[in-house]
Structures are given as structure tokens and as C-alpha cells.
Image 1 (cartoon, rainbow, N blue to C red):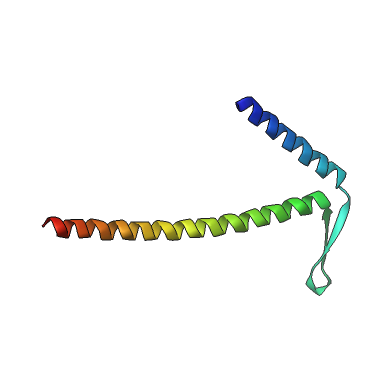
Image 2: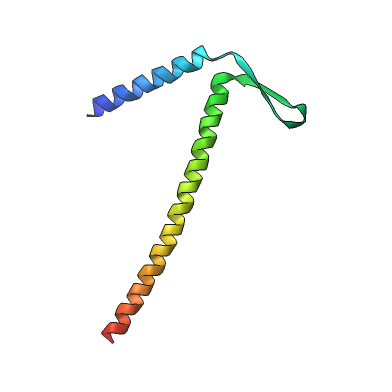
Length: 87
């Protein structure tokens, strides 16, 4: 199973490396106020992917933190109810 996983990782790496080599010509990103940024297409794609992953991770961590706070509140409430019932 580990060998299969490493073969899959190698295949993905080679495919992405080939994509980066094939798309190395510069592109222009035009921003507001006539500012322009030039970079290889593969770098622009990598940055866009990283930005999307960061936004998704932030949203996920926010939801997990909210659920953790709710779980602690419910456990505290449950433990106080059990203490009341026992006494």
C-alpha cells in the first residue's frame, strides 16, 4: 500500500512539474491604478491555488473552533446537571 501511495505521489509530482515547465512563459496581471505584475503562468497558478487553500483552511478552522467551544459548553452544562441530579 505504501508503495502504491509513493507511486501516486511521484506521478502527481511529475505531472505538475511538466505542467509548470510547459507553462513557464510570463503573463501579466493587471491591477487597479494601472499597476502590472509579470510572472510565469505556473507561479500565478500556484499562488492562486495557495490562496484558495488558505481561505478554505481558515474557514474550516473557524468552524472547528466554534464547534469546540460549543462542545465544551455542552459538556460543562451536562456535568453540572449530573452533579445536581446526584445530590
